[in-house]
Length: 126
Image (cartoon, rainbow, N blue to C red; front, side):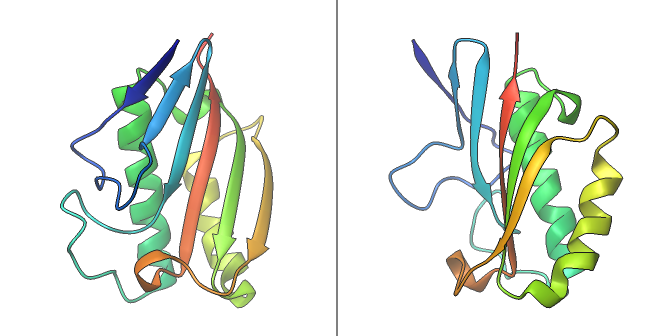
Protein backbone atom coordinates (compact mmCIF):
# COMPACT_ATOMS: atom_id res chain seq x y z
CA UNK A 1 0.00 0.00 0.00
CA UNK A 2 1.26 3.46 -0.92
CA UNK A 3 0.45 6.31 1.44
CA UNK A 4 1.10 9.93 0.43
CA UNK A 5 2.61 12.15 3.11
CA UNK A 6 1.66 15.83 3.07
CA UNK A 7 3.08 18.49 5.39
CA UNK A 8 1.54 21.96 5.49
CA UNK A 9 4.94 23.15 6.78
CA UNK A 10 6.71 22.35 3.49
CA UNK A 11 5.94 23.63 0.00
CA UNK A 12 3.16 21.92 -1.88
CA UNK A 13 4.29 20.03 -4.98
CA UNK A 14 4.58 22.18 -8.09
CA UNK A 15 3.82 19.24 -10.36
CA UNK A 16 2.33 15.75 -10.45
CA UNK A 17 4.24 14.27 -7.49
CA UNK A 18 3.90 13.86 -3.72
CA UNK A 19 6.05 15.42 -1.01
CA UNK A 20 6.68 11.85 0.13
CA UNK A 21 5.28 8.35 -0.27
CA UNK A 22 5.33 5.72 2.46
CA UNK A 23 5.60 2.18 1.08
CA UNK A 24 5.68 -0.43 3.82
CA UNK A 25 8.64 0.33 6.08
CA UNK A 26 10.09 2.86 3.62
CA UNK A 27 9.52 6.57 3.06
CA UNK A 28 10.60 8.16 -0.21
CA UNK A 29 10.87 11.95 0.07
CA UNK A 30 10.81 14.08 -3.05
CA UNK A 31 13.49 16.68 -3.50
CA UNK A 32 13.00 19.89 -1.57
CA UNK A 33 14.16 23.35 -2.54
CA UNK A 34 14.22 26.45 -0.36
CA UNK A 35 10.60 27.51 -0.75
CA UNK A 36 8.17 28.18 2.09
CA UNK A 37 4.82 26.44 2.54
CA UNK A 38 3.03 28.53 -0.08
CA UNK A 39 5.74 27.91 -2.67
CA UNK A 40 5.53 31.51 -3.83
CA UNK A 41 8.16 33.12 -1.61
CA UNK A 42 11.42 34.35 -3.04
CA UNK A 43 14.33 31.98 -2.55
CA UNK A 44 16.92 33.09 0.02
CA UNK A 45 19.91 34.69 -1.67
CA UNK A 46 22.71 32.68 -0.09
CA UNK A 47 23.27 28.98 -0.65
CA UNK A 48 23.71 28.60 3.13
CA UNK A 49 20.22 29.99 3.78
CA UNK A 50 18.81 27.84 1.00
CA UNK A 51 20.44 24.70 2.42
CA UNK A 52 18.96 25.40 5.87
CA UNK A 53 15.49 25.91 4.39
CA UNK A 54 15.79 22.71 2.34
CA UNK A 55 16.70 20.73 5.47
CA UNK A 56 13.85 22.37 7.41
CA UNK A 57 11.41 21.41 4.64
CA UNK A 58 12.65 17.82 4.69
CA UNK A 59 12.38 17.80 8.47
CA UNK A 60 8.73 18.92 8.22
CA UNK A 61 7.90 16.12 5.77
CA UNK A 62 9.70 13.57 7.94
CA UNK A 63 7.83 14.77 11.04
CA UNK A 64 4.50 14.41 9.23
CA UNK A 65 5.42 10.77 8.61
CA UNK A 66 6.47 10.28 12.24
CA UNK A 67 10.14 10.05 11.25
CA UNK A 68 13.34 11.97 11.88
CA UNK A 69 16.72 12.54 10.26
CA UNK A 70 18.06 9.66 12.38
CA UNK A 71 16.10 7.25 10.17
CA UNK A 72 17.39 8.59 6.85
CA UNK A 73 19.40 5.92 5.02
CA UNK A 74 20.08 7.68 1.69
CA UNK A 75 20.13 11.23 0.41
CA UNK A 76 20.70 12.82 -2.98
CA UNK A 77 22.01 16.36 -3.17
CA UNK A 78 21.71 18.37 -6.37
CA UNK A 79 23.77 21.55 -6.68
CA UNK A 80 23.49 24.22 -9.32
CA UNK A 81 27.21 24.94 -8.75
CA UNK A 82 29.68 22.45 -7.26
CA UNK A 83 31.54 25.43 -5.78
CA UNK A 84 28.74 25.43 -3.16
CA UNK A 85 29.62 21.89 -2.02
CA UNK A 86 31.52 22.82 1.18
CA UNK A 87 28.85 25.26 2.36
CA UNK A 88 25.96 22.88 1.70
CA UNK A 89 27.90 20.00 3.25
CA UNK A 90 28.43 22.00 6.45
CA UNK A 91 24.72 22.87 6.75
CA UNK A 92 23.69 19.30 5.87
CA UNK A 93 25.99 17.86 8.55
CA UNK A 94 24.46 20.14 11.21
CA UNK A 95 21.11 18.32 10.86
CA UNK A 96 22.49 14.77 10.95
CA UNK A 97 24.60 12.59 13.17
CA UNK A 98 26.62 9.41 12.73
CA UNK A 99 26.05 6.99 11.24
CA UNK A 100 25.45 9.34 8.34
CA UNK A 101 23.20 8.32 5.44
CA UNK A 102 24.64 7.07 2.18
CA UNK A 103 24.71 9.94 -0.30
CA UNK A 104 25.66 11.31 -3.65
CA UNK A 105 26.11 14.94 -4.62
CA UNK A 106 25.86 15.98 -8.24
CA UNK A 107 26.01 19.25 -10.12
CA UNK A 108 23.07 19.90 -12.42
CA UNK A 109 22.38 22.44 -15.15
CA UNK A 110 19.38 23.88 -13.34
CA UNK A 111 16.91 23.37 -10.49
CA UNK A 112 13.24 24.32 -10.04
CA UNK A 113 12.52 27.98 -9.35
CA UNK A 114 16.19 28.85 -9.86
CA UNK A 115 17.22 27.12 -6.63
CA UNK A 116 20.88 26.50 -5.89
CA UNK A 117 20.35 23.27 -3.92
CA UNK A 118 17.79 20.45 -3.81
CA UNK A 119 17.87 17.41 -1.51
CA UNK A 120 15.79 14.22 -1.52
CA UNK A 121 15.97 11.25 0.85
CA UNK A 122 14.95 7.68 1.57
CA UNK A 123 13.95 6.78 5.12
CA UNK A 124 13.58 3.46 6.92
CA UNK A 125 10.42 3.63 9.06
CA UNK A 126 10.50 0.03 10.32
